[in-house]
Image 1 (cartoon, one colour):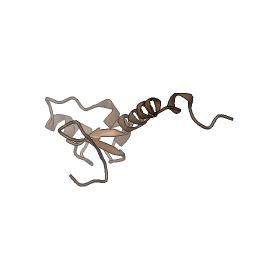
Image 2 (cartoon, helix red, strand yellow):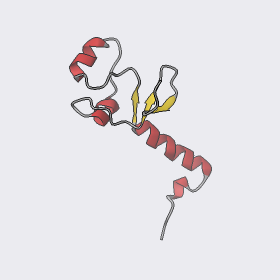
Image 3 (cartoon, one colour):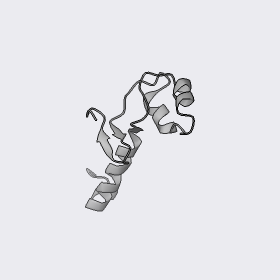
Image 4 (tube, rainbow, N blue to C red):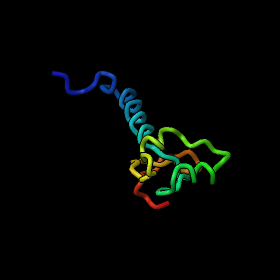
Length: 82
């Protein structure tokens, strides 16, 4: 019986797997919640909305992410007030 995924059995593999999970559930900090996507696109014309953000928040732009990226490119827990 295999308990640990072989790729995550060493520290390097675990770090890679953990980073994948964090990136999968991350939305940029600048995207305002509960605003229709068309309105967000109009407000931020110069910036492309990541498809990952639309996938995570759904068509109503409801915050469901676990992490956010701030302006410095750092990952922060979504529940933390910035």
